[in-house]
Length: 273
Image (cartoon, rainbow, N blue to C red; front, side, top):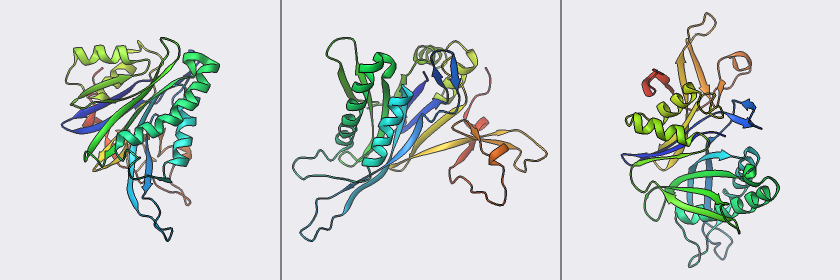
């Protein structure tokens, strides 16, 4: 299921995806969170008085494809663990590569167990991007499994060391073809065209994207012109497939607003099919 595109352009890194989860090849669910940020907090070793300092406190970016259950389970483990870790001088690789390899341990455990039950249907891929204190730059890694031979191998490798695009998921062939035919298309335009072409039915729903503001990953939503008498903004506000000014999410006396930046879709997406 899905299509995830990781891009480095002019040094800036983004992760883009559709919102469709597909079950059994026939059932679609178009509210999938495939691009998200995750806080990572790394503390120094304890002093003699038990105190320590926070030496890494940033939001990393994640993009997931493949097994919904595997991806969700790994992200749950990461959310519970990554805000409470500590490094050891002389042993810990205090770089984003070191962080990626630490995350790969959760990935390996969960995906091996899932693969034993469901083979390739139990496997997910995970794009990870984050600030590297060692290199003072954003680095990107892919976590995947090589099941072409036995024993199965975990692959954790760096990607996008230079400007370019990487495609993952069931729609990667279609996305690559579009990229070759329309080299000026952004990841948003590529995914939108894959959705409209309908050649890969496991890619669908709406769009989601995140990129870095300084050293921290930030997810954005998209506004689309849609004049309505009861909508003072005359727009749909879409994030992860949910219109946040419609139905259950209409503003009422007990409403909160998302503190997430929204951009006008026609400013960043070509709307021709």
